[in-house]
Image 1 (cartoon, rainbow, N blue to C red):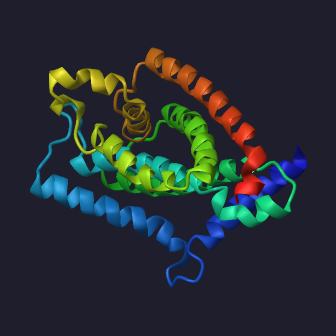
Image 2 (image 1 turned 90 degrees about the vertical axis):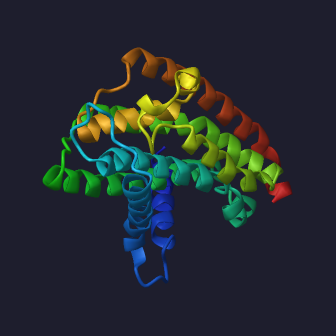
Image 3 (image 1 turned 30 degrees about the vertical axis):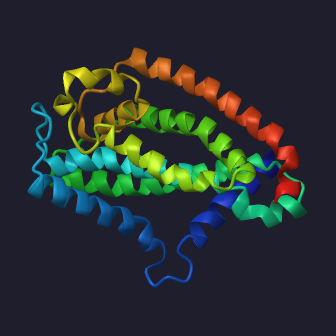
Length: 255
């Protein structure tokens, strides 16, 4: 167990170190990339499209947007990188004997570490210059909810991407669809009543709600709904890990 934890920490550290190795900005790109994207979305949707924040929100639209967008970027990064976690480390899988699933866990953890860094910067700026108010309980629940939600899909995608290489090309478009169906760029009040059912079937809506509650003091999603999704994610995590372990037997041959 101790050896696996050491290996996991080394894999996370290496992943964070090599992401921007050789670039002039180095690790600063870990914050600059999401900041540039967040700045672009803020400019377009607050000044051009002019989407208003929720009526009961006392902060700016930019704060409302970033509190939901930063967790989404972390989720997106985790899924994209976990899908290639095994194929990118094919040389290790072929030559070494170790729990291969740890590659997937390392991809998830490195994405969450970068997300936490971005949220820390946002919380600091929003607290000093805006309406930000940090609440640790919804933040902790948000990270736990996100990690549990990612576990099943991450293991399933990592295994399936070894067997079906075209799958990696589909993840980006599918995530784009989920992004625009989630009230991240817009408040829930703008969703037509006839599409309210789509919100109830979208757990990312509650993920964004938890982080907004933790960073901005807004109303958190109902606890009952969070518990139901947590139970669903626990089942998916079990099934995803089981599929990964069954597929693992052929990884060395396919890679």
